[in-house]
Amino acid sequence: PVGVEKNINQQQMADLIFWLKNWRYLDGKVPATSLK
Image (cartoon, rainbow, N blue to C red):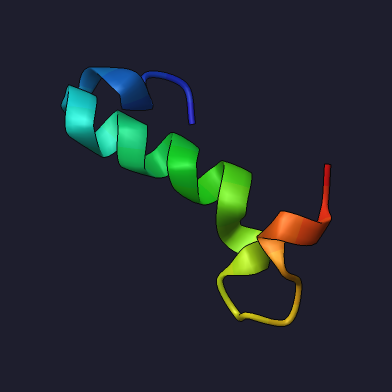
């Protein structure tokens, strides 16, 4: 959403970016180390 970065702090933004980049590995079915 537009403007969401104004309502969250730096750590929350880092957590959001981490989740967006790694969500597909959270269920354990896709090993993160096998992808390059």
